[in-house]
Image: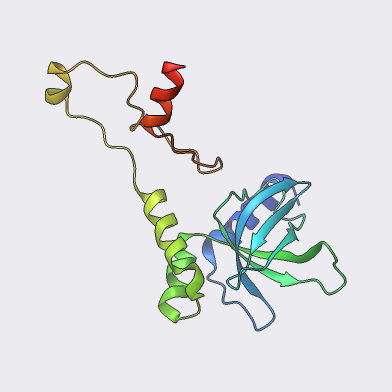
Length: 164
């Protein structure tokens, strides 16, 4: 099977199917990606561990911080305790919530994640922008990278730095 055909089937499988986790499987949230196809995840109970990405997903499906996964446990694993069996997109999350299979601990996180992925920056009306000059300090219309942690800077701190 060619690489393009393999990629097509893997993407179709992930986007098309609605998977229901079995008794052994868990729904987890991705916290970070340390590398080597490993991802640090957190369960609904707050337990953190590493999961491995199977070779069929590598270079075909991209996982970022805040995504949800269904994982299969690995009994012999010390550091890596599970393997990814399915990547959940927002449609999968909604269907699991409707069926009552979604963990309560992830409800707020999933709602926030769906709102952020759906909201797009609004473009200012031409009539409003004609009379005003654009401010270079206003970055509210920029794309927010969800793979980076957001640091909030207060105006008091920046004023203290300028005074020093």
